[in-house]
Each structure stands twice: as structure tokens, then as C-alpha cells.
Length: 443
Image 1 (cartoon, one colour):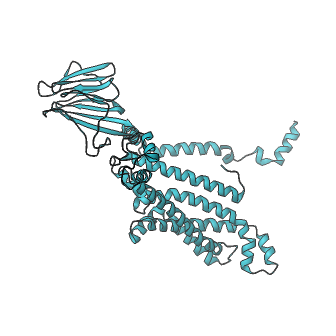
Image 2 (cartoon, rainbow, N blue to C red):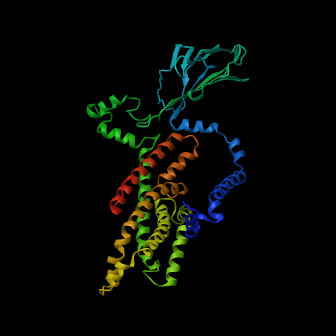
Image 3 (cartoon, rainbow, N blue to C red):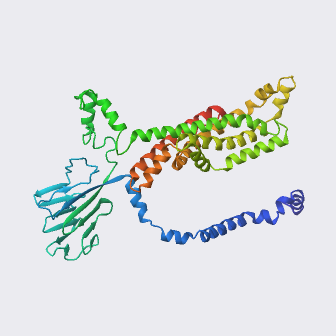
């Protein structure tokens, strides 16, 4: 390209060849600003100290409690005979006889935490504890547990007891007067039937056989009905109460979103400047929408819990108030961005104002309004689970009660999975309905 041609291009397109400093250095400056902001945020929130002082070891403990459970058993060595003692609420039922506990003699027992490689054999005189290829002997002849030889890393010796730590598998505590075992098992204990059910501790094939053709375990009650009742009223997992609370959450989300949409729809026509040319009314309604949605749903839930008491009514009202503001803003902005030509065409025929809005405005905005409403309904299904924690009813309250005990994490995980399943289902339904309404591909 010649010099004259290059100069001609520079004169014709000065913005391309002589960009402003902001355009030339804008992207690097934004990147540098983002890096500096992250550094400032790390200093402001003391992130290095928070990370270094965090109890990361608890993460593994909590996660393991989501998918496993503890079985505890104790043996008193200061009694005439040694017998296993279980807690009153043991997952093994009222008459446990686990295969991993063996009485070699009346005064000599073996407990296997994970096969013979991780086990303890003990009597009133001492104990033999093994962990894989390593093992150690403990004697009680001095009135205290004394480790014979050098204690390995997995064994801790104290004045009053010796502790064998098997990590996820559990632990063994040995003292001169007792042996305590904590064995961790994968799974959810008694998820189908609790220890009071006649179906407890039966194999799945045996349960199915009893339901299909077995004799009635309770006179006058068919086995299928008894099994359903025992599952629904499971004392450990409380399936019935959980499902009722989950249904309350769904009703709260649907009712609150529906009422919010019904109120926001007519108000949006009054708030839209091109539909209702009244500046004061437009401004007042938009500020009303701002107020309704600026107060967080959780705050509304706290307010209505005080007003109506704990329950799903407070949750529905909180969603209703929030959605009135959110949908009102969305609807009014959609109305202000319509094409006025269809409305003007219908108005020129002398049609009534209601018919002008019905045939000139609604067909343009209805698909978008319904799409946004479906999205809010899906979002409120998740939000309803949160506001329940402050007393607004639903599964959120049940979830919070389980979390407060700090020991029932398997039930927490169970309810979290139920919430996820419901959210995924409603997301699929919402996507399918939106696809049919606005003609987009399903995701």
C-alpha cells in the first residue's frame, strides 16, 4: 500500500489509527484494577489469617458424617463377667449381635473394626491391638494401661487410657476398667425401617417376600400397609414429617409467586410510562416496587413470622411481597420496551382502550412475562428452603433443626438431596415451559 493511500485511510478513519489513551490502555488498566482490588479485599478481610487459622480437619469429619454413621459399644472390665454394652439409641437395635464382635471365652473378646487387620483382643489382664502389619500389647497389671514396647504412630498412650486411632474407621479406647469402641460404617443407618419396626434387620428379599405373600406381622394389618406406615413414621429419619415440610415449601413458593404475579401484572401497566402517561403515578409505583424488592425476603419472613407466628403462611407472605416488587419492575420495564405500532394500529380503528392493551400490548410481552415468572417460581423454590430456617415453615425449618444439633449431618444431607432433586425437577419443568412459550431450544 502506498504512502498516499495510507494517509488517506488515516484521514478517513481517525478513530482506528489514532485511538484515545483510554481505548489503548483500558483493558490493561481494568485488569490491573481488578488485581489491586483483590489484594485490597484480601487485606481488608484478613484472608491469609482466616485461611491459616481455619479448622480444615473438620471438613473431612463433617463430610464423612454425611455418608456414614458411628456404632458404639463398651465393655466393663471391672464387672464379674465381660459383656458388650450399647447405647439406648443404638443403630443396631434392642438386641444387637454384630458379626464383628466375637466372644472367644466368657472373659476374652475380639472386636474387628475392619477385619482382623484392625482389631483388638482383650481380657481383664490386658489387650492386643493391631493395625495392619503392626500390633502392640497393653497390660493392666499396674492398675493402668501400660503399652509394652514402643507405641506406633497410630497409638497414643495417656495416664488413664490408650487410644488407637484408625481415622475414618473409628477408634479404640483402652483403660484398666473398660474398653470403648467406636466403629464407623458407610451408609445411612435404619433409613427404611427403624429399630422398632418388625421389618428391622431383615434382608431386602425377606422384606419383599413378606410384603408380597408372607403372613401378617401385625394382626389385621396387611404387610404392605405396615411397611409403608413404618417407613413414613420412621423415628430416626422422620420421612413423613420431612416430605410434608417439603410439600409446604413447594406450596409456599408457588402461592407466593402466583400472588405476586397477579398483583404485579395490573400495577405494571400503571407504572409503564408509555401505557399510563402520568408521571406521578409512574414514579410512585416504581418506588413502591423498589421498596418491596429492596427489603430482602429473609427480612420479610422475620417480620411475618412475628405477625402471624411460625408457619408456611409467613413464608408465603414473604415471597408474595418480594415478588410483587421484582415482577412489577420486570413487567413494567418490558411494557416500556414494546413496539407501539401494533397498539397505534388497533387504536386507530376506534377500539376501546382495554382492547388496545389486550391485542396491541399483551401479545408482545406475555411470553417474556411468563418466562420471567417461571424463572422466579423456580428461584423461589430454593429461597423458600432458606426462609424456613427463621420460622417461616417448610423444610428449611426442619433442616435448621437438624443442623443445630451438630451431630445429625446424615439427616442434613438427606434433606439437601431432596431439595436438590426438587430444584432440578422444577428447573427442567420451567425450561420446558419457557421453550414452548418463547420458542427457544431446551437447555
